[in-house]
Length: 226
Ligand SMILES: C[S@@+](CC[C@H](N)C(=O)[O-])C[C@H]1O[C@@H](n2cnc3c(N)ncnc32)[C@H](O)[C@@H]1O
Image 1 (cartoon, rainbow, N blue to C red):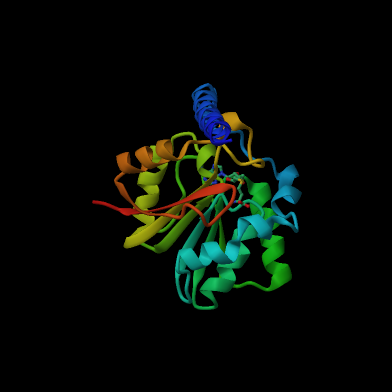
Image 2: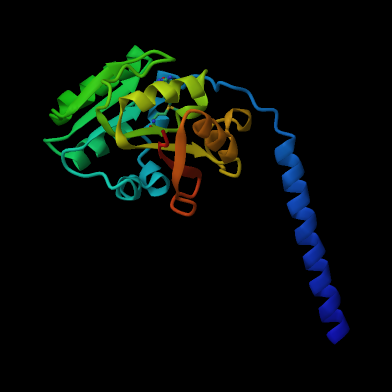
């Protein structure tokens, strides 16, 4: 009986090791493509899915970033404004939210939404692929939610974004993990360590890593290092 138990334990141990090796090998094998395809405005309903809050957990994101009244925040790659609206409520009437996107259709959608909701603290910004077009030294926080993988020259882009941050400003990057059952095609996802290395190159330091907050995305927070 005891022998059988030991054999069973050994079997599960080796099976677990095998599984780890196979999944590590499979990751190595993913052919990455950068930049990812621009998210089409025709897919806005996906971003506005009523079930999104359950896994996106916007309240927890705002809480983790200590979003507060009167802050100036940029939602980079704002798209439909899903997060913009939540940031607008969090920063209140005395705050400013820049809703930044390079696709005019996205900004039109946001403008309609702002009018419908009567939100006065959001400024839509039509930016370009390599320049967020934000005022220097203005931001307490910049957030790139599922946007970083679409940027063609990310290191140059975040260097420019750094100029728009206040000296103690934060830059948050959230991206779908390889393990997530939803999100962009695997080839367009970015391993966390790639993002961290690029941000280090651009003169940022990693200040927080919210590992267990969100089920499908990693959540990194950086501050300017020099
Ligand atoms: C997948 S959508 C994410 C939308 C939104 N953050 C959300 O989670 O609901 C990515 C958005 O980033 C925008 N984008 C891509 N590159 C950008 C850049 N360099 N600057 C600003 N926006 C960009 C795209 O136009 C698209 O609307």
